[in-house]
Amino acid sequence: MTQTRACLVDVYETLICYDFEAHSAALAAAAGVALADWQRAQLEAVDHLDRGRLSMTETIAWILRNCGIEPAPELIGDLVRADRDLMAGGCRAYDDAVPFLRDARSRGLKIALVSNCGDETRPRLNRLGLAPLADELVLSCEVGAAKPDAEIYRRALDALGVRAADAVMIDDQAGYCAGAEAAGVRAVQVTRNGQPPDPRFTSVSTLADVPALL
Image (tube, rainbow, N blue to C red; front, side, top):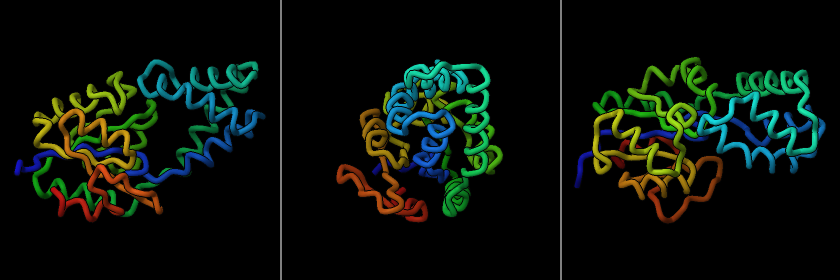
């Protein structure tokens, strides 16, 4: 059996806890649009945000237009600030996040945090003390590739200098686990808060159970 040399670790809902449903509801209410309309437009825009094609300001403007709202600069500014403040106040590291990363480092494993995200994630990882515990941050908005595309996994492997067969991807999303395995990286799914596991992957309900699988 190949020895694990590296962990590729997802960020949101794997290391960081945040209520994205409540976040969307708050922004939709501030914009004066129905939550379902906001979420539909947000879903259409998120891939562009994740790949760095749109800034958060541009994303908010795009969502407003697609909800039939004139994207006035003042409204956009208010929503961008609300987005930033909500995330700053609501994001926290799961209790098992820092112990897991420290344990992995103590075992000599290389670590890359691999996230589909906007440009606010790097400073957030620094503020939460997670960035210093990783060797590399491979953020979709910076590399122009997003999970489940093979490119973002290859970027992480290249940054760490390891082969796909020597790495494990730890992620809460089954689709992203599938993308990792398609790229040759073994996947472990983290299922929190009663999330049902996907039978295709080894699953854990806490990061504390991951080391035994490495």
